[in-house]
Image (cartoon, rainbow, N blue to C red):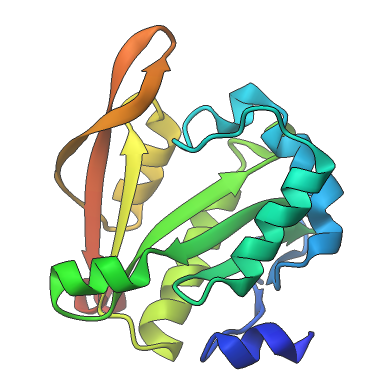
Length: 198
């Protein structure tokens, strides 16, 4: 592992997920040389439709720049998801400062993208998020984790509930429509103590 990222991100670790039995699943340091792989995800409207970001007019140059910003950001932790030595997605804890201020203790917002559709529905998201939560609550000093999912994103809603997140409200989706209809975020929160009891 290149130690530069871990130097600027205290307690950062690459993570093996041995409990996933359908392949070698790892969370690895983000690098710009993975931009070609991640560009294939951001070019696919079906893959990014529930993320709430602007992925219009994707290009390799834009994707390299996006990854540089991710690597340099000190208000978030990022991992690329690797399955059998191939990068298939990304996971992050972001908005740490804002979320910590709002909750009065160290907290962040959990986001995930499985970029290759043929890996959807195989339990990868659940295992990845569980590994990140274990790291955040056991090896780092997070007290709370938040997450959100659009109401239409049934798979994400189910995964968050299965991980112990509690629904705490809803907020408007201001980036446009989903499937031609107005959309709403469902907001979730999980505390360290509850996670450690599971």
